[in-house]
Image (cartoon, rainbow, N blue to C red; front, side):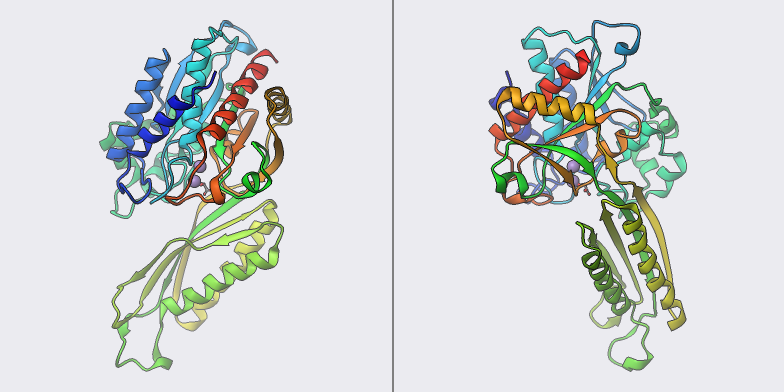
Length: 412
Ligand code: HGY
Ligand code: MN
Ligand code: MN
């Protein structure tokens, strides 16, 4: 069955592919660390006898043929997650789901199981959006939602577009449209992921069965005031872009708190220009990330923030904003959730149904295939930081549950 030593080695090996060794995992798409990680994934897929390929977005697939070559069982069941990270992130976010895929491929071989459906084990690119802004690129490309124009408009902090970065990485970014999979061409998508919150650990529960994933709307806001001498410019004659940004940042926080029901609002990235202690900030750019289980709550909050931004123009500022990501709240597939529940009971593990406050490729895949997620506990609920941790025995339990779920979905 699932081999804890093997998954430990996978996680520890993948954690070495980081540009910030000793300070968490930083693995940005189409970087050297990406290349080392994808080579490792491909090597393990090859060892497991999978047919390895990349789609036009650079997402890595390992395909294992099934016994059925025609009819509705000839379409693949997909299992996996993403292998990029946030800056100074942890070793388990995304990678745990990719390791689950590798381990399930190995166990199918060891148990001599031939599924009826083909199975595609997948490692998505750029789910976090850490390098190019908005995320979920791998799954959105499969949905057919990523265009060449978007790739050219998505630019990293060095001014390199995703389009160029993919080309220099060896991918033909002009063909991004070829990554699209038709509706009905995937039998199911199952993603194992760490919970990234405190609930499972706090309640001593082994498995989370994800009912729904919050919607995410993400914006970039730019406020343009006037850079001035910090010593000679009287306070009433300033157009200090950072002071106005600060008011809006507090406003994001207040609106999310007032909305309640698990709604969250975050300003996680800010750039102040020219960025000198003795210059009144002339330009500030910051991100706004709003999440809610209800679309109208998400939209309401943004509309209020947008009004606040527009009001700055009456005060002599200029302001711009652009949407970077907009994904609706999604409910996951009831049938597969039931299979997960059956598998968990068969294995004798405890479980609870829960919502996901984090976004995942599953929220995009759910629009093109029956989709479900399995959570495993996060130590102290920490994630998106070097302290992120999941005990290997807990991860192994989650992988066993996904394995059982795969067999049930395959027989359905
Ligand atoms: O932002 C998220 O929720 C995910 O980690 N990309
Ligand atoms: Mn993440
Ligand atoms: Mn993730």
